[in-house]
Picture 1 (cartoon, helix red, strand yellow):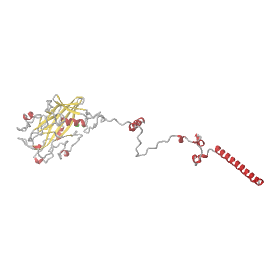
Picture 2 (cartoon, helix red, strand yellow; picture 1 turned 135 degrees about the vertical axis):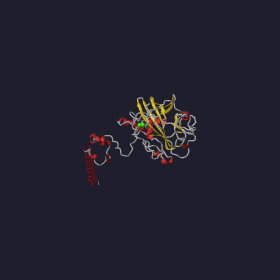
Picture 3 (cartoon, protein in one colour; picture 1 turned 90 degrees about the horizontal axis):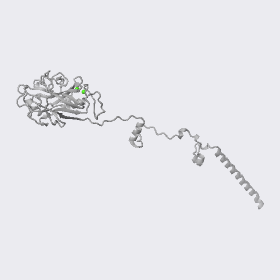
Picture 4 (cartoon, helix red, strand yellow; picture 1 turned 90 degrees about the vertical axis):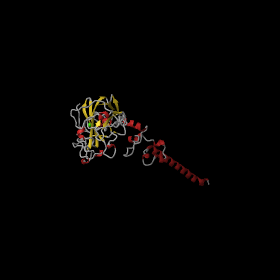
Length: 382
Ligand SMILES: [Ca+2]
Ligand SMILES: [Ca+2]
């Protein structure tokens, strides 16, 4: 039994020995392969998938290029997509932009245009921070400031218009003035500002009031179209301060030797809610302008008794009007010419033709004897 078993035991021992040798050889081969061929993990198979330890995948640094080691670049901006707000908010972003060399936004003006009118020694005075001269005018100095000089007279148009707005006269009518009732073309004013001297700055204001017609009184006939001129001389007396230094109400027939008068004019204490205002008296039906009730009553001109207003109120009353005014510019550079949109079709501000109130001449048989242009260009040296 024992003898029969010996061969099988020996074979078994041989097999075990052979298996042991095989295992040792295989283990030696595997270890040799791992130690020698350490590039085997650079292929498609992931080192983690092969079960190799961390120590085994710690590869030499020269395996990776410089690009691989750099931090990832931010994505390029895409057109139409807003950039993310930087950490710290928009302000921090703007600061970062400024540090990066981006041009800073232009400064925004905070000061506002300020204009006031007052009485000084019996004369009207305007104080405004609007610049008078177009040369050197900086539109960023004040909010909503325009330095336009579209009539090319060297004066800022907005400054000219401030003078026209505040120095134009209010009109006091007789309670029975026909134009205050019933349909008619509007009573309007056209204004021009022109330079007399630049140092000190002194300007003329020519203000022409347009009436659709005048009616017969005494021996004066009716006319289609009626014009009345009122003039002011304005002088700069301090920084930003401009004073009325003369007024004139030229008669129908202009006298070349006429001069401005410096007498105190009648002024409303509050003319339309914007401070004091020049007040003129308009003769009933004929509209001739006077500087006071007494100058109307005592005039030697065509004044019929009872046609002057006797209202002496210092406030705007129910028979007073403050017609809208339009800046007409200069003859060489008109800001307006056709007066259709102002209620006077076929009439022009800058034209040699006489003014007919936008009406058929035949209605009253005759027109005004003057053109608007003639009155806008009237100039007194003194
Ligand atoms: Ca101008
Ligand atoms: Ca002008």
